[in-house]
Image (cartoon, rainbow, N blue to C red; front, side, top):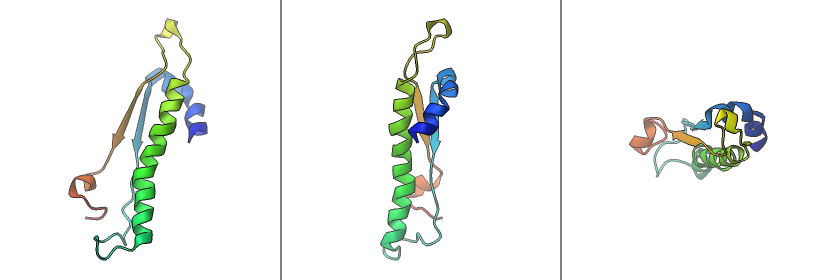
Length: 94
């Protein structure tokens, strides 16, 4: 993830912005009683850990941006994490 983000550094310098939208809707993710642990683990690994990876390495890449006062570029930026409407339902499947 860090290699990808640092390779995209010119884009991030220009915008200072990372947007991470991660999520799966596994067809076997039913409800708390019927969902198997391996499906729960997969969903958490993608939906939660994927966002964490994006933040962890996105922040590092943004802070590594060189200062260029002529272009008003400074280390830092913003990260926007998004979710689908499913997050409001508290379920991975409709």
